[in-house]
Image 1 (tube, rainbow, N blue to C red):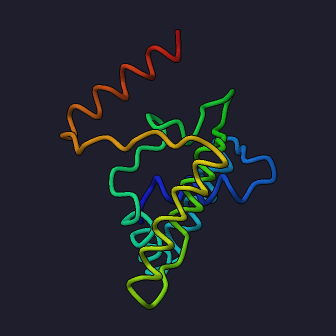
Image 2 (cartoon, rainbow, N blue to C red):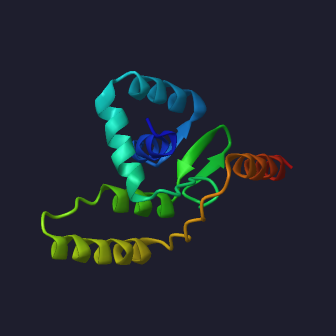
Length: 133
């Protein structure tokens, strides 16, 4: 199961896109134990955006005891969920249109180049410390 895709899917399911941590944990536990279908689905969605980082890309905000999906997060999730057509020209057309649709609703930041895990963890700690101040 891809954690970041699951977080986006959970948050988008709430009316205002905001969920407190207890609700997120509960929903995450339900989905994590729901079987291979969910794990396979999140892997397919994550493959659409291989360098997904919901916090550094501004797709999810931490707000007083919970997380909220942003307009950018909704746009990226829509892009991930866009179904490719059967033919190659149609696939290219859909790929060309999806970023345009996302850019019309919100500006999606460029994806980072793959970084090593330790560097990403260090950056996350630094962001957490900065946000806590």
